[in-house]
Amino acid sequence: MALKNVIGIDHAVVVVRDLDKAAENWKRLGFTVSPRGTHSAKMGSGNNTIMLDPDYMELLGVLVETEHNIPTRAFLGKRGEGIERIAFTAVDSAAGAEEIRGRGYAALGPTDFERPVTMPDGTQSAAKFRIFQWPIEQAPAGLRIFACQHKTRETVWIPELTKHANGARRLRQVLVVSPEPAKDAAQLARMIDRDIKTEPDGAVAVPSGSDRADFVFLTKDQLGRRYPEVSLAGLPERGGAGLVLAASDLVAAEKAIGSSGVRSGGAVCVAPAAANGTLLAFVKA
Image (cartoon, rainbow, N blue to C red; front, side, top):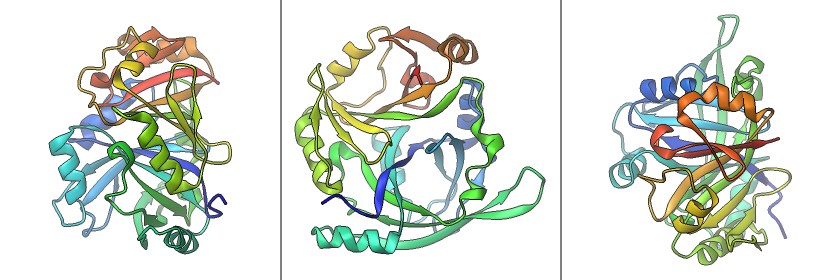
């Protein structure tokens, strides 16, 4: 039976070395980027979000080295910038953690945390979350997963932040490169109780749940064949590689992205080198 408390991809975490520079970079690509949020002293991290509907992207940076952010620092040291983790939407994190424990996974959490938020009218509020994680070593193709329960959606999905010059509306696919796509896809499918499906080019998709984005596992060569005009320089052979985004208007997307964009594979693409280690592919919504 599918997990009852996990309902599909919530957001993608893109780890960056310098948050301010990354935020400016994504603004140049036509995204509306939230002001910086600062996590607790224990976490030692900060973020900027790029809000879509019903999901989003998170630029995450280490502000102070702590025990909690050792895995993130290790990722940056080994891989460099790029997609480190994918979050699922949790209906109830405590119940979700129990669900995966019942399937044999030693869940971490649930853990509560929050970050301050300045609302559009200048008032101060907070974004509050409760998360749980699958074991860190259970990371298909090196991609860590966790689930996030939003306790204050109104301080995260702020309407002004969901409108983007490039027309981005929602995530369609998370692209994961692997020398063994079928093996890693099967591992993820077991972890979230979903079926797999093979795509025409041999890539293997794992639906994340409800109408949310799919995971697509493929070799780096297969990814190159999907987007032949895009340089994949800097991408690993194994790990989170890119995001496919539904956009309202590809002409507007191309205009907003400017010189960083290239048409390839029926999409308007941004090479990983121009998007902090993350291939972006805009397709028509």
